[in-house]
Amino acid sequence: MDLKQKESEITGTAGENPDRQWAIQKGKVEGNKVTFEVQTEGPLLKFELTLVDGHLKGEARAEHEGKSVTAAVDLQRQKE
Image 1 (spheres, rainbow, N blue to C red):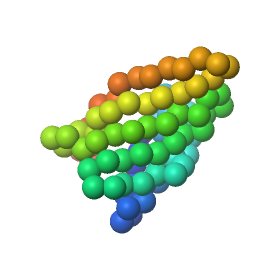
Image 2: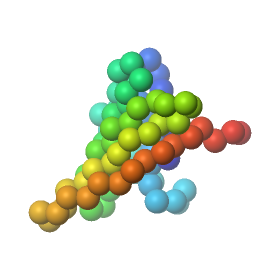
Image 3: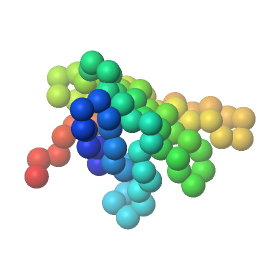
Image 4: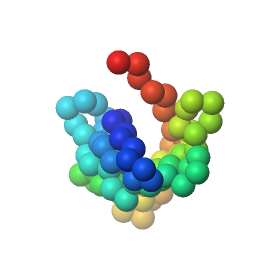
């Protein structure tokens, strides 16, 4: 995942590996909360994250063909 913040807007990409990425949509920051969506080739993923001790933690949700899936997310900044 590659997130970029400009004021209260989040942009960037997310995907399963560096060669397979999708654009982040509807990204926003409100206080310590970060929300955004990623439209994959399949389901739309909705992320709801909170900044906690330098990590963005929360969950990603997807609905596809009548089934709902939730995954725990824990992101940390990669040092360049």
